[in-house]
Figure 1: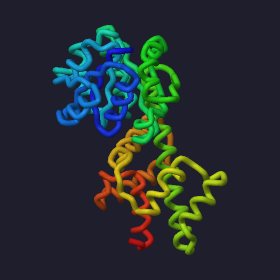
Figure 2: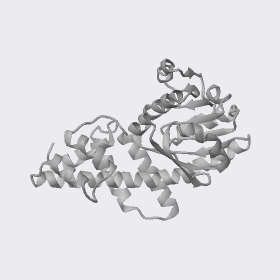
Figure 3: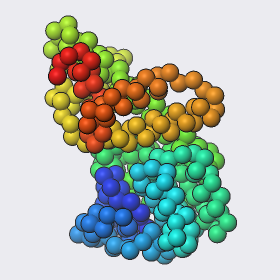
Figure 4: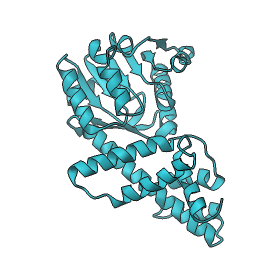
Length: 292
């Protein structure tokens, strides 16, 4: 069993830590919200006062944070991981952040003997709770082999995508599909509703054919029920779509679908939905079709 240092215990990180503890790993946790870290002591975690303290004795260090600036602060900041390289020499960065920033931090850590893997995840809070996350990994294969016993406690699919940054690029491709798929589900439900079709029956019919998807299975019921519950928040979805757009612009790849769904999510946030689950996109169609 490994000694793990874990930085960032929000909605996803909390469940990931619990699964690491269930698997028998020792986990030191740090979060800028002290209460979030302390809440895990009842599960067997040890609270660290800083990112550096959380990881300095770790076989495997992990970060799971909202966006690029938070990861940069945790790694490059005055009391960050770069100032206390993990004993095992491996940092697994599991947030969804900029591929370019990932490569820059990886190069900085390499100078102090630490291999950084970018390993963002898909599966949302449900996947984090059930330890069924899909983990997309960029970085050195040797470092991945060392980290696999720890990653396996959190996910069931672990794919090595290539060099540093490749995991982040893969996750952005994933989020592009997620966003456009969500939009498609919303539009199907909006059209069916306008035509007077029972939406539960419509969903069941579509699940039996080629329109079936994870979104149709798991989020369409929440759309129909107008459940605002925060699973994967709209604010985070917009962050991922922004990163996707930035990458596409840098590479000269037109992504009109990404642009459209980003604008629809921005409409949802403008109506106070930013902290709600991304199924809240459906309420944009309520407003567009005067069904509020």
